[in-house]
Image 1 (tube, rainbow, N blue to C red):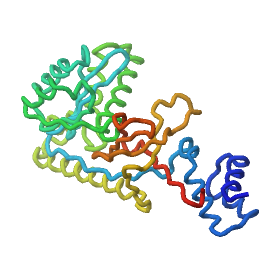
Image 2 (cartoon, rainbow, N blue to C red):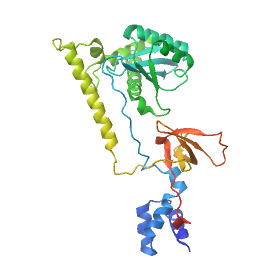
Image 3 (cartoon, one colour):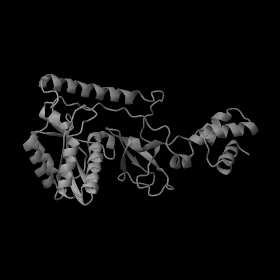
Length: 330
């Protein structure tokens, strides 16, 4: 029997693809050859079945970018379309005060988005920057022309990467909660539910600022009337900026012991199974071949059977590297 056959028979026949420690402990009691540990490790690391079915306990390490922090209200806003039941809402959040607005849309067409944005601007003024997902309702000629007219920049978040739009994702969870409570307890439905839920959110103290969005939007606090506005807002801006930098640094320092692995063209990877319908379905599918590494943590992938014109783009967090088989496993 070859080394490969011994390891394969034990892992696939007796233990159903167990891990490195257990496999090595059992085999070392029965067999011995030079570099036994390396042989077992190479075999397990290059097992495609394990890569597709098991959880990825050593994902690719990403370097998070520090996003700009606003220094005043309505300098930067986030927007997205929220689907709630049969209704579609345009939700807008100010990045500084966390003040939110929600507008019931007739449709998700660009003209309806532009009309509601104009309504928002008429109350709060035009921002310097809008952060939105790259859905067709935002990434189109009409919206780009509308924002250019008002000298507003727009930044699109990475597709399928909710954390880069966390401010508004958190708002959606809270708004949905409030609307369900209103429908259940007060029997309120329709546009009134949206208005009341938004008001309840804006009246709640936010954990990032320790004040309600309405208080910050009005630039004065009902309880501390004698506190100078400039001093109050300046202190809040500094605290928001410091807390955000602290959180980002903490994330970047986590798991520093792991050596980051860079993707290069030609490498083989697996990707998350985004259409997984049952728990029995594999967590990852593939393998795919890396064709090009893009900016913003994205990568172009293909298959050996695909033409050069056919490809897919995925975020690095959806990618799992396939280890190359060494000579020990051949």
